[in-house]
Image (spheres, rainbow, N blue to C red):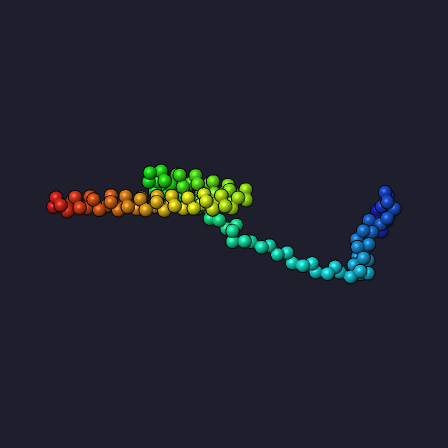
Amino acid sequence: MSHSSPNLFTGLPPNYETRKEEHEVAVLGSPPNPAPTVIHIHGETAVPDHVVWSLFNTLFMNCFCLGFIAFAYSVKSRDRKMVGDLAGAKTYASTAKCLNIWALVLSLLGTIMLIIIPVIVIQSRG
């Protein structure tokens, strides 16, 4: 079959549609540029969920299981954010942040005490 032979089903050359579109563009001109799409991202959607911080506290500084509880609240915050409940997400994120701060402070104090007490005991014996 040659390139210009008609199609058996429609009787039209195979490139008829492309030529028709080229003709329309030539006659009508190219379409005007559409307005650019603008997406507004509000500051409210950026609710931090503190999952990474909670996971770190769960694995390394889990004083009184506060890291694990903070991780649970962080996951709840992420779930609320996915559903679209920003107020609930902020509440859970705030609780997770508070628990993470307490877990960090108590773990650091405990670590410092584990270093200072043996040094004091060793110095008092010597």
